[in-house]
Image 1 (cartoon, rainbow, N blue to C red):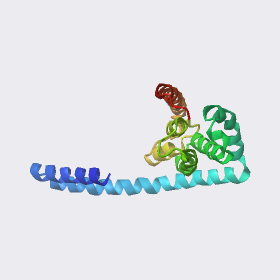
Image 2: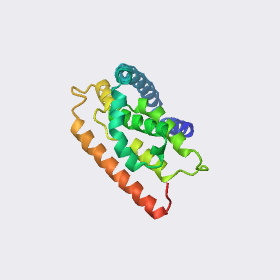
Image 3: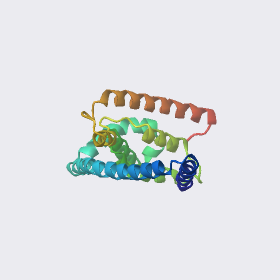
Image 4: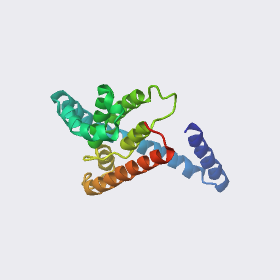
Length: 192
């Protein structure tokens, strides 16, 4: 990424010099930096709110109950991973956090589940690990907390008015992702 960003800055400066618009390039850089800081600060409050909600859910046991709801489905999707209770717990908690749109809270749980699923695979991702990545990437979201915070920071009057579109698109992406992962697993002839 550092190479890409450096390349973009160098190209901008070169074009600014050749076109005589170096003042515009400088002004755009300063305005962009200020906007980035403003966006980060405005999102911080909403992210703190949702992180707090997740912590409350953890402490009152709601996230555990939500994870238990997913266990029967996850046992069918990931039969080998579900043999280990800790792996299944991490996967269930990851799916639950993604369902609530808490991507930042879901990441450590997904990494923990992936590390446990990768044991004994000799550096080759199993079909079930690939399926976990699909579930994590194309997760169904009931409340897109991160997107809503970005929309609120950008001045949207109703940041959650996108819910029906989010529900439909995330359900479709998970369905297509699962079907593709299962089809590729069959084509590869690998089990696991």
